[in-house]
Amino acid sequence: MPKLTSLDDLLVHELQDIYHAERQMLRALPDMAKAAASPDLRKAIEGHRRETEGHVERLEQVFKILGTSPSAHPSRSGGMAALLQEAKAIMRGDAEPEVLDAALIAAAQKLAHYEIASYGCLCTYAEMLGYDQVHELLGQNLDEEETTDQKLTALAESVINQEAEDAEDLDAEEARREI
Ligand SMILES: [Fe+2]
Ligand SMILES: [Fe+2]
Image (cartoon, rainbow, N blue to C red; front, side, top):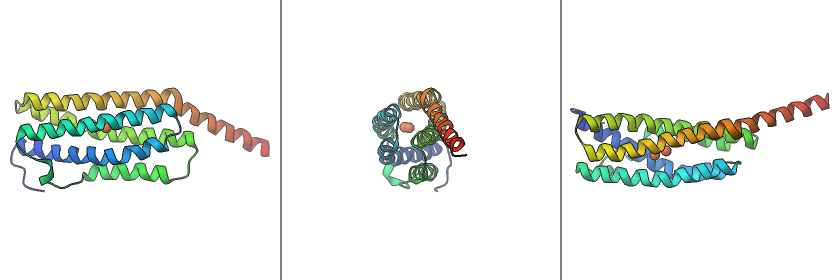
């Protein structure tokens, strides 16, 4: 990692990380959508994949405004790679579909929270540096991530966690019958 000597350096460093994180997510979200049993969850993940394309485009605009490019730095976000690894392990594992959905929501919320932390910091830096247009663009990405997070919470509470509990009740009932 090159030496960071100013808030401008840190801004660009964090932008590189979130840019590559967004691109890594773009590749992973279709598999997560496919793995979802609940049509509502699948739709939510597919919708967020489309939003993620917009996030990448806004970040490319930001790089242009700042007169820098995303490709000059490492091509992967280590933090995001670890979270996506965890999501893949969930999809590969053996789980009841309803429980898998609950686990997918948890994984998707961890991804969103990574982004919320990044965009939150980036917005603060852009504001402190007086980069109004950059602040505006990053704020739009932050807003969409926060809305996604809320949507996922609502899905978890209303449908999927309930279904997971029902599946557990059913298993318990079957186990009782076998005794
Ligand atoms: Fe995003
Ligand atoms: Fe996201």
